[in-house]
Image 1 (cartoon, rainbow over the protein chains, first blue to last red):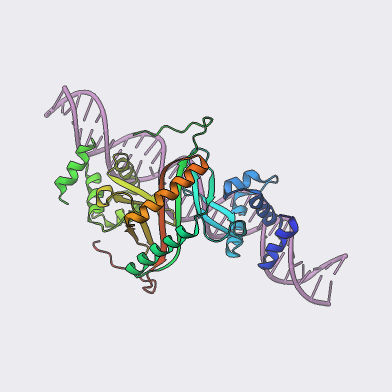
Image 2 (tube, rainbow over the protein chains, first blue to last red):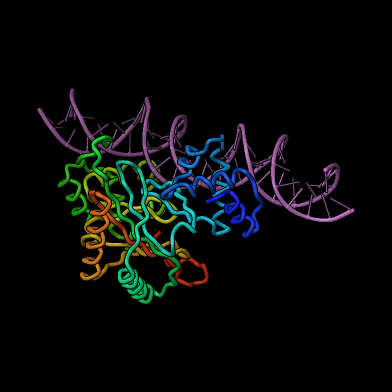
Length: 150
Length: 150
DNA sequence: TAAATATTAAGAATCATTATCATTTATTGA
DNA sequence: TCAATAAATGATAATGATTCTTAATATTTA
C-alpha cells in the first residue's frame, strides 16, 4: 500500500500524521501476518523506541486501524484491521514463533455462533468477543526446541 | 476432598508433602472454577508468598495435577486437572473477573478436530493444543459477585 | 534419630508494558 | 509562510506479573 493511502488512513480517523505512525503502519502493511511489538522494532529501518511503538499501537487500536491480541507467551500482537476480512482466528507456531491467520468456513463460523449463543444464554452473559486458537510446531529441521520433556 | 486424598495425590506423583502444596491444592479443590495466583493467595488463611505459589503451581503442573492457562489480561490461571474431564474451554466475565469452564458437545468437538486437521495439513504443522474462549460481561452493574470463603 | 536431600520464604532480578516529562514535531490560523 | 498552540516523541523511570537466588527449614531416607 502506498504511503499516501496510509496517510489517508490516519487522516480519516482524525489522527495526526507522524513518522512513527506511518513507519509502524508501513511495517504492518508489508507483513504477511500479525507482528509483536518487538518484531515491529526489528523490521524498522530507522531507530524507534519500544515505548513509542506501544503508544502508537494503542492510538491505532483506539482508532480501530489495528487489532491486537496476545500470543501464548503473553506478548502483544498487532495486525492491520483492513488486512483481514471480518472475524478470524490464529495458528501459532512454537518452533518458529510465527503467527498465521486462519479463516473458518461459513458453516463453522455459524456453528461457533450457535455455541456462543447457548453458552451466553445459560450463563446470562453479554458476549463481546471470542477466539479460537491452534498451537503447533512446523517441524523444520533447522530450529531445535528447548527440551522440556516430562 | 479430604486432606488425606490431596496428600495421596502428591505422593502418587512422587512429590514430597509440604504445607504450601497441600494449602494450594485445598484452595483449588474448594474452588468452583479456575483461580489466579493472586486469588490463591487471597483465599489462603495462612500467609503464603506469591513466589511460593508460582513455584508450587509449576511443580503441580509438571506432575499434571493442575492445568494452567492465561486470562485475557494475561494472568496465570490454575485449576485441578481432576476437576474437569478432558479438554474444555473457557468463558471469561469482564465485569466480575471470573472464569467458567464450558463444555462443548461431542459433535462440536469433532467439528473442531476436523478444522484443526485441515489447518494443520495445509500449513504442514504438528498441532499440540487448541483453545476456544468466549469473552463477555455478566451485566451486574460492574459489581463483584460472591466470594465463597475468605 | 541423623544425615542427605528437597523445599520454602523473602526479596532481588527480569520481562513486558505503561507512565512521566522535557523536547521535538505537527497543526492551525493570521 | 510563520509563529502560536497543541500533540506526539524519545529517554527513562515506574509498574505488574513472573522467575530466580540463597540462606534457612522442612521432608525424606537410611
